[in-house]
Length: 308
Image 1 (cartoon, rainbow, N blue to C red):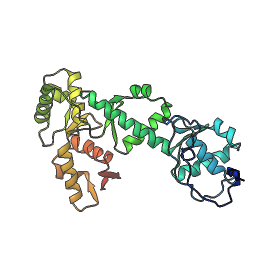
Image 2: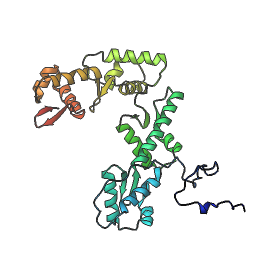
Image 3: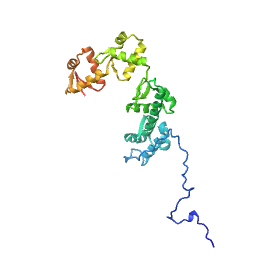
Image 4: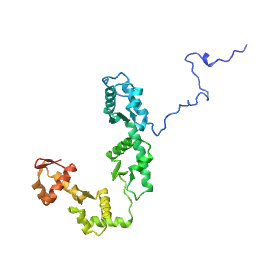
């Protein structure tokens, strides 16, 4: 009598064998949220003290909820549906996650959270988009915020945070609400490039000259709006510096002055000593010192300046 074939359920425990081609097919996963809003799962949370009013496991639950929302962010209303806690306990959990760099708190009342991975994810998308924009818009200084907001379907608060982070990290630069890659240089017509060179050479050279817009306009016969645009371009290229008192000076001269101050070997400097060092009158010395304060080269302390 021929034995009947063994059923799958009859295979002895621990028995092994090669899978058939049908069995080796990958399991079909269930539908997931679009990759536009999903971020990769980070490492497990480190041990953290239990937040007041929370229960064991709540921190992990909140972390998962925030990540699941992707670039949309997690609102307090959605959080409390899945994690019914009092507001103080929920806020304490959010602060614990922010302390270890897992989330960004965009608002406390009501609570609004965004996963740090979502910020990084969106940042990568923004950088790629702006880089592609530069390739076809060489004469434009960058992408304005409205265009980015129209292209990326994310809350404006989230978009602003991602852009701010990229500017802070020196990945992007911002000028008049337009965003460009930090190393991007706008391509100008040859005539405008020569005009910029002439303007810089005539008005600044490489020596100290603190000029106002009116001074430059008197020297350079060009319409005022156009002149302002040219000066903005020189500022963008870090060729000149604009002071708060409305004067411009050459960036190279300011760099040389900064190096001189730090080479003095002194911790403090009086206004009289600064005037002697630069040969400037008080009219220019005071606003220049204020500019150095603003740039973190010096710090005012009473009647003297600390050299930082």
